[in-house]
Image (cartoon, rainbow, N blue to C red):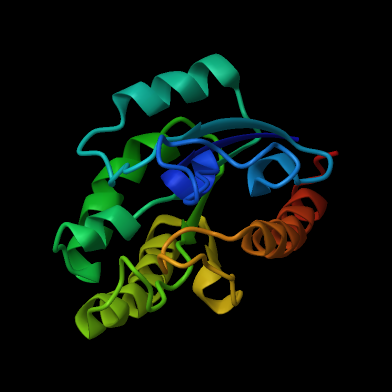
Amino acid sequence: MKILCIGDSNTYGYDPRSYIGSRYPEEVRWTDRLSGCEVVNCGVNGMTVPRESGRYAGLISINEPDLVIVMLGTNDLFRGLSAEQIAERMERFIDPLIGTGRPVMLISPPLLQYGEWVMDDDLLEESQELGNEYRELADRKGCLFADSGEWDIEMTFDGVHFSPEGHAAFAEKLQKALDDFRSREGIM
């Protein structure tokens, strides 16, 4: 199964122990741990929910994935947007992606945790609310949905980025969701 993943630094595989934007090795990154999947990784460090999706609709057309995964919103929280505002922006972003005819899976990012980058209770609360907002959005739009906030993903010292163990746990939980999707759709 071919998957196109649109996301931020946790999709990119950013290693927060580096100071120059280095990535974890392939064997650590969740995008490279999915069994039976060819992944087109479009993760970008610092990415927020884009205001338009033309570039990504083009990437979908070129790559012809069996599934498009979108996991964004964490950086929008850091820019002061509420979970509701992020979901509104996400709706505008995914509408054209859905229009490509490819199945879209919206994943709510893992919950932020207290750390060097996260010290604000309001930020943690909005992080928790994002899963509810995305669930409602996915229901309205007929998208697949996964709330990784329920997956207990281990973060690093900053409270934002996956640890190596977090990447492994994320891949394991997502693999189950993908296997269920493949089974329903008859995709090998």
